[in-house]
View 1 (cartoon, one colour):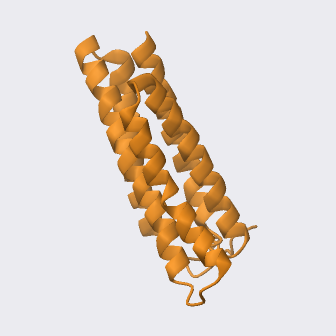
View 2 (spheres, one colour; view 1 turned 180 degrees about the vertical axis):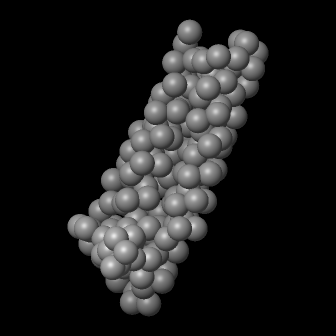
View 3 (cartoon, helix red, strand yellow; view 1 turned 90 degrees about the horizontal axis):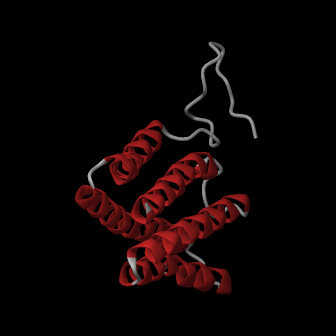
Length: 162
């Protein structure tokens, strides 16, 4: 889907397919800790590298819980009480549970679990957008952020194995 352009050729912020500027900036800054910690996992001394990998796992758990909360909010904003709403509410708590389980596992396994969880949440978010349960611009925000997060987690995992 193409975004509407104004007469000047710039993206129209009123277009429902345009990612809001605040969401872009805040989402992007939320990815900085992942990238920074991944850098430390590879290039810092071993004691800092291990700390960075663990910090990344903790931050990943927080962000997975946040993403589940977004789905919860979208589900409760629909005033109708339907089976779909019950399913969406139930699925919205799964990222937090997976993240918690990932923190209980050995670090390398937990990081892998979180990569899988971020992929599943991304799939859920794209599906919600396609069905009209999330804004049409949401995948444009989530896709690049999720790729950065998953790549960072994998780099952190490699850092723990080296």
